Length: 366
Image (cartoon, rainbow, N blue to C red; front, top):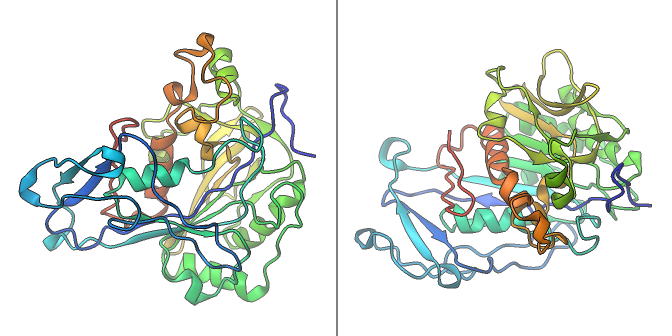
């Protein structure tokens, strides 16, 4: 059975596609695509641990005029425009590369069950981060080895299962757990985890396995954010996470320029004394916990609602055309793009060239 909600609305669940942001060698400036419609061309979902690739400049539907003297040239994805962002990062502007991978199956229970697209995050990055984003999507369980993990700066754990709703849920052997720990502690990797794709509490077991070294873990319970505006919650089909810790300097930037994001029927998080609680729901119960672990960062989030296209753009939201929802839709009231920027930036602070230019969903950089 899919997980249920106290509000009686459909149960959420969707996995992210893994993403990479390659911003190296930007001495002439960063080229940013601002599409007027459509999204990047994506490959298949990948099988057997083989990643699929979302196209990059020249390969994924982007046709850019990269002449620095042209100011803001026309072209870009789907007839949009591109913008040259002056490069100011580092000596000689030799930008390092940030690559992000997401591991796990897509969810099945969004705002429109089996119809709420899971492409919002990758489309946003590919159209708003210099047109050089790629996507590595591991929908079948890969073997976590040092060589597999080495290319990535951030890894996002989604639904670690053969089927996000029914399982069976994956297990990892001791060598894989050790490889993940080493990648974070000694290589400086950033690990972000999501959960609550199903009503089966056993879904947390594989994720807990991989983050045990941090001392953080998920519980098998169900938690709900407190709705701050019932009209907004009804139109978004999710409750509003709004209680953020904005005073702890270690994790304050996670809520930078964020007022609300959707969280509905997540799982609470156990935080050790040396971790930092960034957000809570009534109880209080922890909804977002970060920890500095050796050279790396671990960030554990209680839900997956922030992945839905319905929450980013309104696409696939059954309430999008409801006249009573004007002014109360999630793309109007939630700051999903900013929240994801904050999480990626916090998880990998060494990615100094990570830039977002998006006129439709503006992001304040920090």
